[in-house]
Amino acid sequence: MVTDQVRGLAAGVLLAGFVGTGPPGWLATAISEGLAGVVYFGHNIVDSVQLAALSAGMHALRADLLIAADEEGGDVTRLHAAAGSSLPGNAALGVVDDLAATTAVAGHIGRELRAAGVDINLAPCVDVNSDPANPVIGVRSFGADPQLVTRHAAAFVEGLQGAGVAACAKHFPGHGGTRVDSHLTLPVIDADLPTLRSRDLPPFASAIAAGVRCVLTAHVRITAMDSAPATVSPAVLRLLRGELGFGGAVLTDALDMHAIAGGIGLTRAAVAALAAGADLLCIGNPANGTGRGDGEAELAQVRRAIVDAVTAGDLPRERLEQAQARVAGLAGWVRSARTGTACTQPVALAEPGLGLDVARRALRVTGDVHVTGQPEVVDLRRHVNFAAGRNFAVLLDVLRRRAPSGDGAGRPVVLVDEPQHDPAVAGELRALLSSHPSAVVVATGWPDPSVDLGANFVRTFGNGRVNAEAAADALFGPVGA
Image (cartoon, rainbow, N blue to C red; front, top):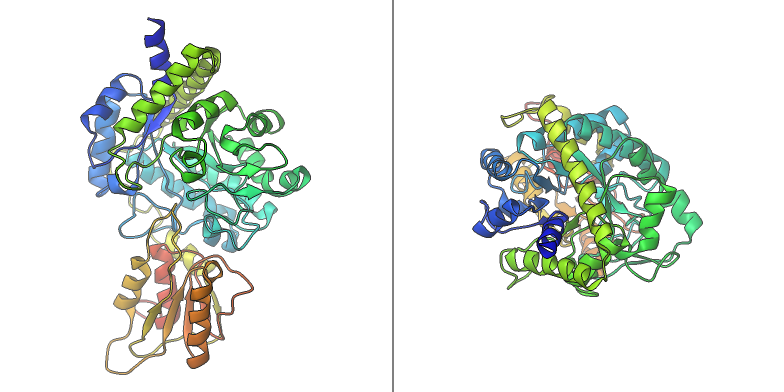
């Protein structure tokens, strides 16, 4: 009986991924046994109708099941992974620096998620992108200025939760000062505590003051605090609970990311994260990598490791009960919000021009970028942000659709994201600009002053569909003009 109770508690702190567009049998069984929640990835989603039906079916299995997704807008979208987001991401919002626009964009994202049956948005990203060489945050950040990020963090939380979806500020205590991607290896931040307190922590404090329901941990090692990654660091999580006063649910970033799984391992990390003070463990995306199965085995392994740790006395049962209680409290808030903001049909844009308007306002143009005639498009975007996935086709599709027709040859148009990450790409860009000085460069990523974009360029601050449409306006003129 005791083991059965512990098994139930262990299930109640896990957020599982799965493969497919419908719940497999093992997932339905896990839900009936008390699984805390499910996280969607792009491969789980066909369209809004399928997604709403999928969520409704799983909520019918258990009403307090939590369903989560990453829907940041801009580059990181799950609902619109195929066609690109109709809303700009954080960098564009930060450049515009209109808090009302940030709240409106977050509110629309929340209404769309609510219609899809999603309870938790793993957003906003409130990291201060203090290093332009950061390979994983970049345009997912509101900016490099802590005060800018701090005020937009609160505005986003207010807009999202006002629509009845729990917000999740990430990646605590800050991922913006790293030069490696935690999907691939463990980043190390050597900043001292005064720097962290003045640079990285204020946006989290702002989100907490705005009532954010969840905070998501970073798989980064903060040398001033611990030799362990923040996700499994008691010192880091004490800082969140004590100094910042956060009383909500602490989520882990995906435990299958190599910064964790490639180090202490998935199951050990799950137990260590709970012991450190985390409440809800995101197991990750079983579609990443090869030979991983559909998520069933990893869920079973993590659940068994937690039960074994409690049985052996390595993880206090009281800590597991506390974590499960916080998750239950989150589920209670979600159910109340779901009832109060009922929406059963896919949401159309409440403000049809909102996303494109903000994307146009964020656009930065230098020199003469007007293109007449059929342009030769050279795509140098090779850097893959693993959080966003490959979304290169959106900009290409928009440019091909919007480019002038006819026999006349236009100026070369060169597409780049963040050349600072790849010396080979930076070299190709220099060579192209040397041979074609009139070329127009469209840069979608985070600016780095060390990269020369030539005399004529456009910065979009994102790869979303509306960012692409705004860039096409600058190159070819607005539609219908």
